[in-house]
Image (cartoon, rainbow, N blue to C red):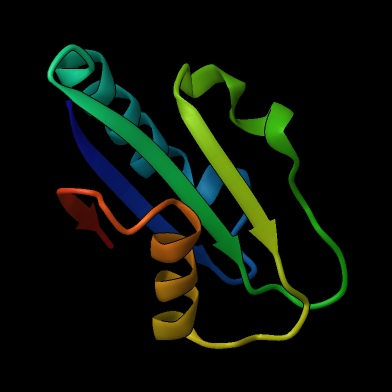
Length: 95
């Protein structure tokens, strides 16, 4: 089965700020889950402390990995981290 990774890098956004995007990814997953293994990888560059945990994303009904780094490594490096953390043999990655 083909593998698709959605990479989301956030910085200070609240859950309600990214909710429309998350719901769109959920909709994509519900339409194509028989054809693809779909993963969402979230990298949080926000300083101080982790604002989310895996329970925040259960409503998506898909595999979600969340990583928080209080040191802002930047958009590009964070997307690379999401990609390699979720295996490089994916067919597509959406950033």
